Length: 141
Image (cartoon, rainbow, N blue to C red; front, side):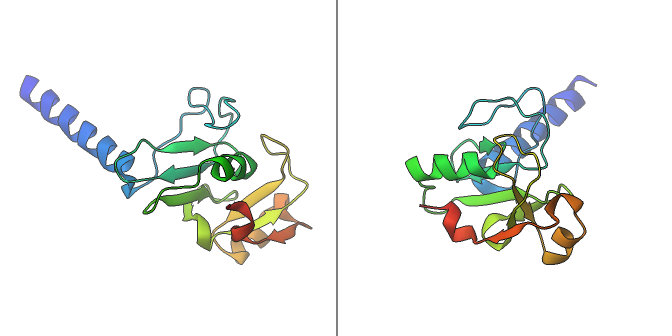
């Protein structure tokens, strides 16, 4: 039984290392994890952003505006992947392919910026109703 626990622990460590090595988003723990820019603790993950760079710990943000400010001062390294949460579904989406909208929705930093995987997901999200499209490139330096 002890061997089984050690094996399970080893698999968990390897999985965490793979995620932290730029292969996929990490699970954000609301109430525990904090935004890298504003240092606020995550209340929810519907507006989350992650920078995933090979060999580096994931960098977490609670609002696209926090990501924008951080990226202006610390441009993502070559090979980094940026993922955003689809506000409606919670699924991770590659940032550059996301549909971003500036809405009147309450977001952690008041930006109103919401990301969605597709225009259809945005259109099904009441929080994005009446919002204005935002080009991804405007969020990067």
